[in-house]
Length: 268
Ligand SMILES: *[C@@H]1O[C@H](CO)[C@@H](O)[C@H](O)[C@H]1NC(C)=O
Ligand SMILES: *[C@@H]1O[C@H](CO)[C@@H](O)[C@H](O)[C@H]1NC(C)=O
Ligand SMILES: *[C@@H]1O[C@H](CO)[C@@H](O)[C@H](O)[C@H]1NC(C)=O
Ligand SMILES: *[C@@H]1O[C@H](CO)[C@@H](O)[C@H](O)[C@H]1NC(C)=O
Ligand SMILES: *[C@@H]1O[C@H](CO)[C@@H](O)[C@H](O)[C@H]1NC(C)=O
Ligand SMILES: *[C@@H]1O[C@H](CO)[C@@H](O)[C@H](O)[C@H]1NC(C)=O
Ligand SMILES: *[C@@H]1O[C@H](CO)[C@@H](O)[C@H](O)[C@H]1NC(C)=O
Image: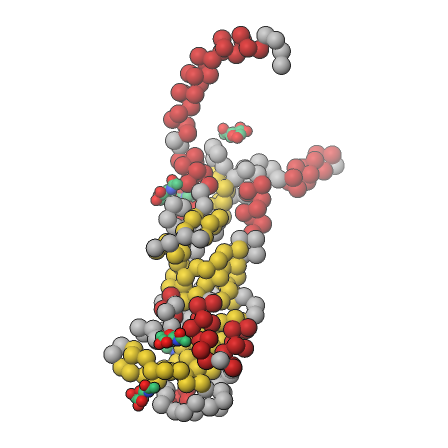
């Protein structure tokens, strides 16, 4: 440090103060608000580190994509897909995996209504290593090696017997005679347990299943690497990168690759 630097900087201090005061209105500009709003992550119970493409709670809708709204209820993160409310058990942003379980099957296999699992295939795919558990309601047929009887449930005021199968049920009369059936994906390992032990049925439902979200991760990575924050314009349905003082469709500053490309362009 130069020995004279101290007196000089103290001389300039009032100017810095003035500068700081003048800058206040610009820090309130809309780009800054979006930048700071989307810089926050979602925390809910044991979940942390949830950012783009998710939004909800402390993150405004422009911080994520439609179909990725999260809610936090009593410390439990939830996402809605069609008629299903899914509990979020875990999130892996690097692998874009969301581990979920159906809210209506959290307390066992007697839901209030019979609703199939319907995921939003525009944004998600089922993860690997899953098998479909089919729960049959109101069949009144005896157990077989494929259909295993559980106990009765009261659904919508009606008492119904419940049985399940973890394998394809093609050719069996059961689906036609039952009051209804519901398909819930479970882990392959849980399905193997269920084949030998019906007592694990509630645990297998609680264990949930994995969904992989289908979002172009490169766009967001490039934006982040340029010190931007990822967002989405729900009007134009396109990705946006919020920078400290402006908004970009790609990145805040040229990426390494873009700089190299420009250098090559200038040289040639
Ligand atoms: C972000 O914006 C949303 C919607 O306007 C608001 O509810 C939320 O409190 C904001 N969060 C932060 C951290 O400013
Ligand atoms: C599973 O949940 C049902 C309610 O849906 C309950 O009646 C049953 O006792 C539970 N079974 C086990 C093994 O916990
Ligand atoms: C769930 O899906 C299966 C297979 O498509 C169908 O047979 C069953 O009726 C559906 N159940 C409900 C409650 O919609
Ligand atoms: C389970 O059934 C659904 C249709 O209800 C299907 O989309 C999905 O691929 C099936 N999953 C497995 C693992 O077979
Ligand atoms: C289940 O309900 C049926 C019909 O209501 C009844 O006949 C049967 O005894 C019940 N089974 C059990 C285990 O409660
Ligand atoms: C989205 O695009 C519309 C139309 O171009 C624009 O008016 C709006 O400000 C944009 N929203 C965000 C969050 O950038
Ligand atoms: C925005 O801020 C960056 C540094 O964060 C600066 O290089 C750039 O000139 C600024 N742009 C505008 C339009 O103020």
